[in-house]
Length: 152
Image (tube, rainbow, N blue to C red; front, side, top):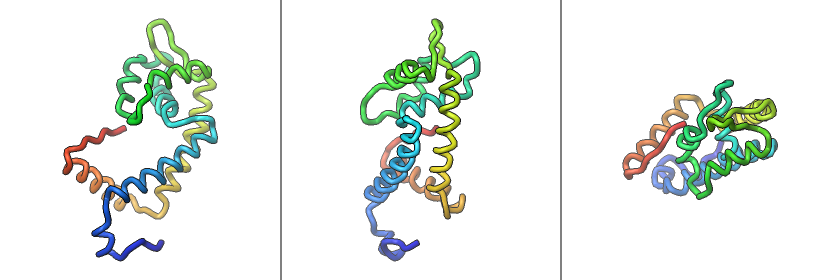
């Protein structure tokens, strides 16, 4: 791979631009994979919260609370939950527990395979040690400027 600058030049590059460019490329790639299955990221996040919930399901409020920090551009995770119910991919019982339908579970399986492939493509040629080092550097930068980062 050819880099945009030599090491000294890269050390002077603006992290704001490069972190945005990485976010844009990675998220666009993942979203394209999800779109192949008629999904956007917010419903995908909800499916992931429900996939291991079993027959008992998971309380709607718990799912909404867990995902509350994910939507940074407005919107409501409640709307995304309702979307999955309307599409027949999830159900909600009177106790407000959500669970996947068979169709929702099948869609999750297909989409998870595609997202896994996208993540492998993103990670290609990057040893785990370098990947971990990059994430640690980004987390340190977030901390240095008083930001917060949540984890999945």
